[in-house]
Image (cartoon, rainbow, N blue to C red; front, side):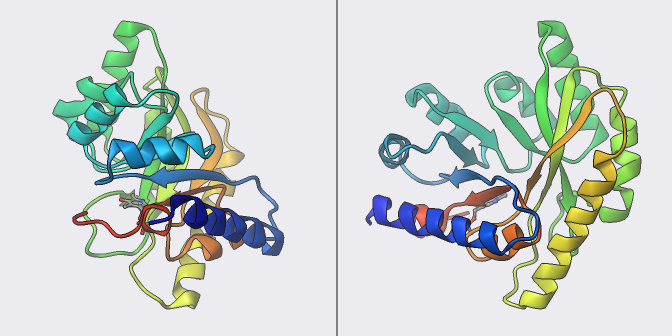
Amino acid sequence: MDLETNLKHVMEGIEESKLKSPFKRNVELIAVSKTHSTQMIKEVRDLGIKNFGENKVQELMEKIEEIQGVNFHLIGNLQTNKVKYIYDKVKLIQSLDRIKLAKEINKRALKDEIKVNCLVQINIGDEDSKFGIKYNETEDFIYQLQDFENLNILGLMAIAPHTSDEALLRKCFEKMNNMFEILKSMRYSNVDMKYLSMGMSNDYKIAIEEGSNMVRIGSKIFGNRNYN
Ligand SMILES: *Cc1c(COP(=O)(O)O)cnc(C)c1O
């Protein structure tokens, strides 16, 4: 496993796709390190990558303890009873998808007098996925989030359907970008639509062409995982 070569290919892929995209957005890379060792993460950190994504709270906590000089993003489902372990330790919670969860994060943030950065996770047409709010309910959900003043809602996150149908992927990403643009024009005090987090190892190029400015890439950097 040559992490440096993998990373170089991914960076080149990102640059090429940016050039093809009409949006010309800067793209942030989140290296998805779930299941991989702290040693591999440190190696990628030392190659200049600062942002890492994890999807399990326990694993995330262990890695936060052991690895300095990086930011961690929670990209997986967050149970309400586990908020207390991570709300003040992550750069961004990318998987906010329930009012109950917003309420719990806000309660803790309020007590500490801090703001917690979140993305709203949207379920774009993958019927198998239990997570994310329905696309058509996005505006209403964000409207309701106004009540939670200690949350900074910084954008949207989506996982595209697992398919090689490029036209379908493109359509999903385009829909997401449309919603991102709609929400950008709204003026809520705790909402600032900065990030459109979409695109993974197999679809990040299409995602960037369609407006993504944050990609979450695991296997193309770290290789295959043993479990999800
Ligand atoms: C695992 C995961 C990724 C990265 O997946 P790859 O296909 O390995 O790039 C991105 N986003 C989320 C939410 C994930 O759970």
